Length: 258
Image 1: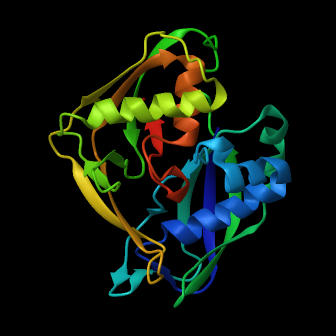
Image 2: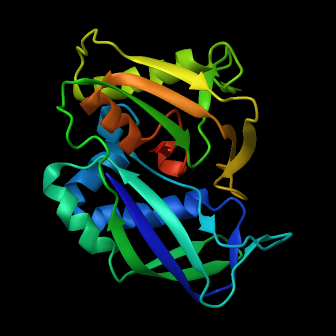
C-alpha cells in the first residue's frame, strides 16, 4: 500500500543530508500507533528474517536549497513523501487515520524540524483488477536508491550497481527471501527481474545512524527501469516492502511507470 503525504514546515529550518534514519524512526512511530502487535513484529522479529516490510521515497522538494550541514527548509515549505507499507487488511484503514492531521519530526543530534501532515492520499492500486495468482509484468523505477549487496568473505556487503553482472541475480534472490517469510515453500512460478534504461544510472552514498558508533555507509542507485514478472501477490509484497536491502531506512521504494 502506497501513501502520499504532503508535509508543511512548522518549526525548524534544517534537515540533515542523511535524513533516512530519523525519518524511518518517525514513520515507525505511526505504524506502532496504528497496530501495536504488527509494529512489534516489525521491530523485534522482522517476521523472523530481519525484514521490516516498509519503505519510503526520497523527500520531494519543490526547490532544493542546501548549506554545508544539510537541506535548508523555509517557513511553510511544502514537501512530498511517499510511504510504502505491507499491511494486514485489518490495519489498512487505521493507518490512514494515524497519518492525518499529525506532525512528523526529522531530527538528528544538531537539528530538529517539525512538519504538519496536511494531506494523506492512498495511491491508486494499478493492479487492483488482476487476480492474486495471475502472472503479471510491470515496469517500475526507483523513487529512492535501491541497495543490492553480495556478501564477501568478511561477511560484509559488496554493493552492486545495475551494470554489474550479479545485480539482478541478487535482487531476485532478495525478493525470494522476502516471499519465504510468509511461505517456506514458494512455488516455481514464473518470476524474473530485468534491468532496462541503465545508461545514466545515478549512485548515492547514504550514511545511516550518522555520528554514532553504529554509523553505516551504504551505496544505492537510481535512474533506471526494472521489469518485474511474477504473481500479482508477489509483486505487491515486493513493492510494498521495498526492493533490495535496507528498506526500512528508505531504500528500494519504487513506482509503476505510467
